Amino acid sequence: MAKSTIFAIFMIVFVLGMVTKETKGQEMCRDLLMRAKNCDDSTCATLCKQKWKGNGSCFPNVYRKSCLCTFPCKT
Image (cartoon, rainbow, N blue to C red):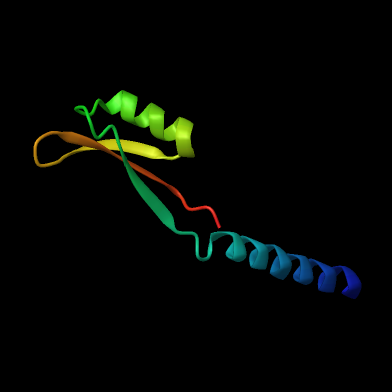
């Protein structure tokens, strides 16, 4: 009984440590796509997903809408 309790506590601490290691320090990177033409929401999202497995959205820039892609940085 005592061995199984100690083992269970050890496994919980181990799993929590692994989860913390995975999420700690993960930064998000950004890149602008479709600079030469006006942004289309569906095209922007598709390009970002294909290129970086990220999320893309259009935002108003000075003269036109630009595509901003946000994705997890590679370490």
